[in-house]
Amino acid sequence: MSKVKTLDTLFHDTLKDIYFAEKKILVALPKMAKAAQSDELRAAFEKHEAETEGQVERLEKVFAEIDAKPQGKTCDAIMGIIEEGKEIMEEYDGSPALDAGLLAAAQAVEHYEISRYGTLVAWAEKLGMTQAAKLLQQNLDEEEKTDEALTGLADTAINEMAEAAE
Image 1 (spheres, rainbow, N blue to C red):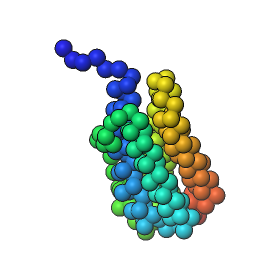
Image 2 (cartoon, rainbow, N blue to C red):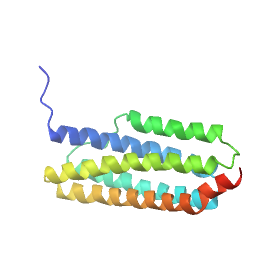
Image 3 (cartoon, rainbow, N blue to C red):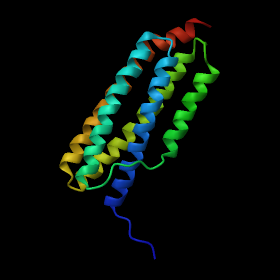
Image 4 (cartoon, rainbow, N blue to C red):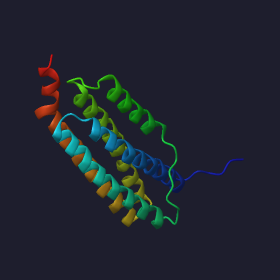
């Protein structure tokens, strides 16, 4: 008979999932920054890379709080989103629509992270993990701000550049 799975177990598994995702994102962001044609988009990716490093550090503190070793668990969702980003970089290289595609891929990542962090915050609160909830909320707040900044960039520059080239 299998072991009963609890919310604690689910929290830990999901924490490993987002840790894996953040580590993969740290590898992808410099590639996306290099591919970006817009200085503003490149700067946004570079800024988020620095934020992501801080998010990984916070996740490591959450692992410490639950007396667990920081480790990732393969996240097929983030792997698929990152693969889509790679395809955009290849298929739209040199195209006026490249930055719009990169931005869309970045927002897909942000939306995934927002959903994961929102869930983890709620579970941490339910489990009485006050410090973990605060750390995870900081990550969630940063992801939401990044998503808003990317939306603003899309609305004011990137999508217009892609459309103007038609």
